[in-house]
Length: 279
Length: 262
Image (cartoon, rainbow over all chains, first blue to last red; front, top):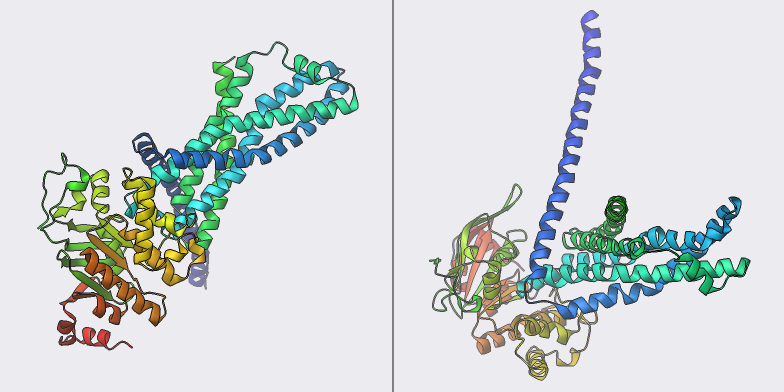
């Protein structure tokens, strides 16, 4: 009886031990996958950089991508900017009225749009549209052997496909941010003017009063980094895709999710950096 | 056989010796994880000759072609293209060798954002930059005529049938006037009539362009029609290599079973 009792007690103990080992094993595997992913991303970045800076340059494809990323994202970022402008205006006005600081409205709107809302909204919108597009396009090319066909034709896919798309993202993000800012300020002013008379001239004058380039240029140009992140992650996810239609879907989703996530994380670092460098 | 000649100082397009075998594969091994695909393969294709590589699915035939054109790296062994060991080449030099080779993928792998004519013109646009636009258009038109799809020049790949896609893929593979042509299952997925048309087309192109070819196929009739020699692969090894008659006279049971396929 006593022997049997010991045996039954030992069994769950062994089970717990096995479960613990399995847990440790899967944790180790997760850590290894995490570092492998970053290692592969590093090697991919190096290959793209090396291909991108050495001739022959793919100017035509780069221009096509500038159009694809820039011109075709224009309506979307303009719309997003307009919506952000109205919402920010309504929210800011309510808060400022509560504290009796209505006169601060123009500068409050200008600073919140240009320093905070404009860049991040542009980044997230472009990440959704362009990131998913690049991820899906390259993944589809990968699974249908089109990328292999490029290599077999002695054309460097890192140069033709990745470097051009990443460059287009880097160049277009600041310009698209300016579009978002402009539409947000215009609709923000319009929403305010509907409630209480305020000319656009007065709004701009009061909004930008005492502003320096240091206040506006760094937040706009930090989107160069957003462009790099969006393009790099999308190209990386697309070009390493495997597994048919499911893999293409996964690459598109990961391009958006990881692109947006890294973009927000980068924003934390960049905001701090800008505060230190441009106090 | 593979020579470590002075490649560092020579332009990529000029390296290699055209008197050497077009392709020489020596003791080639390739595994994916635990799965050994190629297990010490030896093959040699003479200039202007056509070798058909046969075998069951999963015996590494397509992997062999990918290794030959440098889309994958072997675990060990060597591949020499016109006497030049490609494992010792820089990326630029490998690209120089690739410009002398044409590759037809199993599913054609046409660029789906380009028309048929743009697909064929793509290698010219990248590697024959000295050509004027009209010269390039003439060359593309000539190639599309040669493979019999000149009426579909402006069609997108999705608008073409499987056979027509293969023809456009073949025209693209021929665009740079290759000395070596690699064909991965050129008749796979096609009806018997289209398959024979593709065979006839390949024969015609071989006689006109005098290329060395390696054709990976399951289609025994096609292999017999278009090749001088055949190599039969099983479990990562060449079971037998020779003419179709050599294979038919072989006593090996696997060879006889393979030849008796419907």
